[in-house]
Length: 78
Image 1: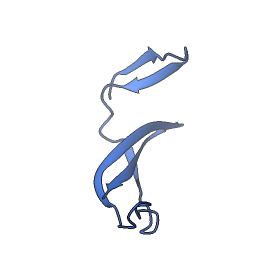
Image 2: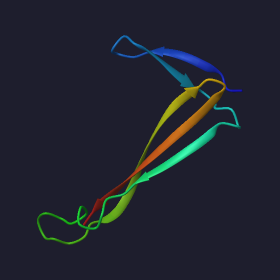
Image 3: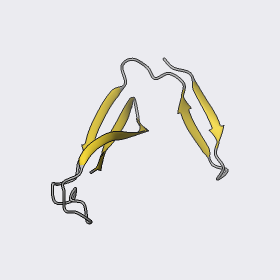
Image 4: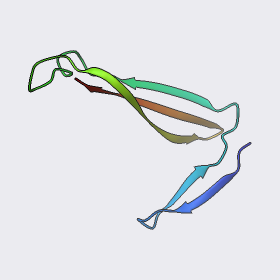
C-alpha cells in the first residue's frame, strides 16, 4: 500500500496526497468531449481538431474502497 502524506495548502486546509497508490485501486475514467458544433471556431467556422489532453485526478475514499477518478478534457485548436 502507498504511503499517505498530508500537506498544507495555501488556503490553510489539509490535503491528502498519495505518493504511490495501491495496485488494486479502482480507476474510473471519464472522457469529456465537445460536440462538433461546440468545436467550431467562432472566427472561421472550421472544426477545431484535438491538440492534447488535460487529465485531472481526484481520490474518492469510500468506506473500505478507494476509487481514482481520471477525467480527460480533449483540447482543440484550428
